Amino acid sequence: KYPQPASHVVPNAAPCDPGTEILIHMQIPPEIPAHDLTVKFHCEPTSTLGNAEDDGDAPTVEDLQGAYHDGNLEDLPVAGPLEMLVAATVDPGGNGVRCSVPPFNKKTFHLYNVTTQVSLDGQRYTAKALPFLIYNVNVVQVVPNLGPLDQKTKVEVVAEGLVKTSVQKARIDFPWEQREVPATYDHTTHSIRFTIRGLEDKIHALQAERDAAAAALRAA
Image 1: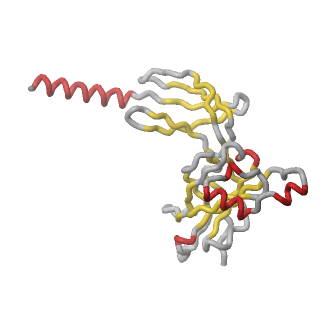
Image 2: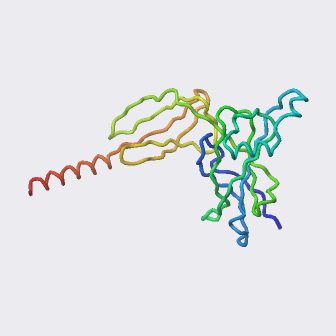
């Protein structure tokens, strides 16, 4: 018997650029061969070309798939559904399947409604398609754009192309590490808000390194 449909996707959105890993929650029978797991990203145009004759001449699904694999998708008009298949793996925690989101064309992604479906045998797909959001965010302003190392700083990022998703995070790149912090979406200002905590632990570590280096110089 085919397993129960997938329940939800985490995260339920990804940027146009490839590489975002998602987890599709569903029950996976233990006897399922891992090499057959496949996730289908089905892209349905929000509207047709508006002309029956043009619609008839629009690329077929096979044409679009071939163009995607050849890297020339943006050379084709937006018409007809597009299906992109990616290999998946079993989630080590037993929560479902994982896969990486394929790249989407930044010029045309907004013309499609995207859903995901899972196949355990590479042929049949789960009946329930889960909606998935694709976005292309451009940061307009960061307020404030600086802050103290030893105190918390509340930050607001104003950006174009934000979407409301189930997971909101901000990544801060320091010279010595990367940190992810939870964030919230403010639909009234189209901004993301988060707090960067003080870096007292890093300050103390740097001070200890300087003290040790100074002691070593004195001993020499």
